[in-house]
Length: 285
Image 1 (cartoon, rainbow, N blue to C red):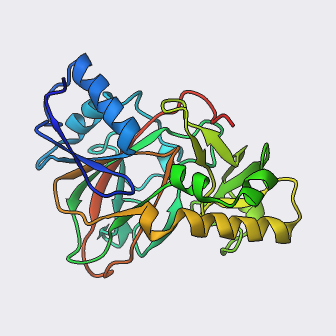
Image 2: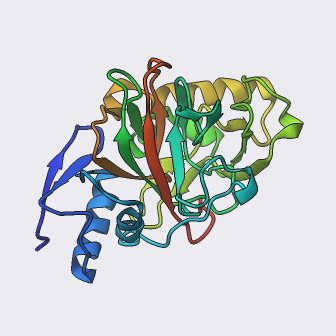
Image 3: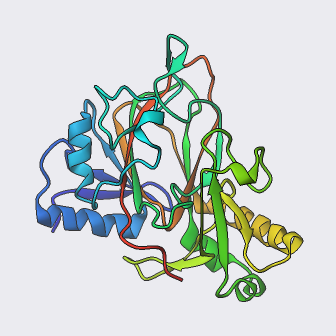
């Protein structure tokens, strides 16, 4: 039996792990139990005040191999002398007018991290260092529920089809967003519905921010189906919203959930530290 307690965060998804210190070394049996909890609950929360980046990276290895940063090192805003190559700072803090991290301001639509890559990262681990007094929450949507809730006519229409996903590091590029689609730095095609390698369950694999089109369908039909899929995935009863406090550590599954950020006052500081769990293969239908 694992030497920790699992407390559900919501009916939609998510659980808090109580009685386990992420700063401590995790043995193989505990790591296996954590991966089972992750499989079952999709999002795991740990309370870990004072966690260092070295401890975070070591703990992340309980869930799999550490993912590499997609953005070339020379283009990252982080201080290379103090921030590990595998880490990204999510922050609106600026020093001498320059941001110290990425994704600084405002809200973000629901998305899967690195869905625009051939082999997307399996998971994301995010640690809160400074948070605003209000807003900047992270919302998680259960994409198992989303697939199951779609009308049969939609599931039949997209059966065997793929969708194309894009991302632009300068503007949030989506099919209805700003920016030149031809200028996207990355893009890839994956099945509209995937089979999760750990659970064996079917999950909807499209999102509002990064999915441009369903391949092989007329644009108007693709747009209409995608809108219905996005609205279904983002149903309130399928979503858990996390209100951050400093020392919170979350790890979530990028294959069967998407996540979004709520707006927050731009004058308030926000600083979180992110690493990712690498995927082993492209998502399968």
